[in-house]
Length: 223
Image (cartoon, rainbow, N blue to C red):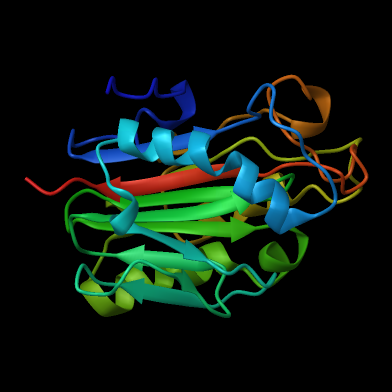
């Protein structure tokens, strides 16, 4: 299966080459409605194809439950593939682990420490941003593994932005990243608003809940 095309805002995350990231937007022709679980089942085959395109199997995928909080789970290769309860962030130091979060306006934040081989993927919407889940993840990397802010690469996927949404959490996520000492040239914001491009993205707010979910993915393939 061919590799997925990497959007520009994720190209720095995908270094070194064994690190793979993706952002799966709107899937054309798939019916979506207010039943989240039924919609995700219909999107499932396309999402599974995408993760295989990144070089991973479904048995390597771990997802956050996403409760609009700031808890982060550590994922190890020996953990069975699952949805991690009560968390909005996932982190790993292991190859052969694929992290995933669903979004439909909220921000997917990708963090990589290429020096120490640590990856984190976060769901940061209004509440998660208020609770500084991104700063918490960076602090966790620093305290547990000695990550240095100057080594980190951080990216933000498409999300809703003003004037479509009254809270500019994208700007706040940037502020949090820089406050932790990450150099500005190692921070990349897609700059894309989900509400303005319903041909390519889902927007919970604009579609009044009758919508699908994008899938953010991040992992390091096993050699």
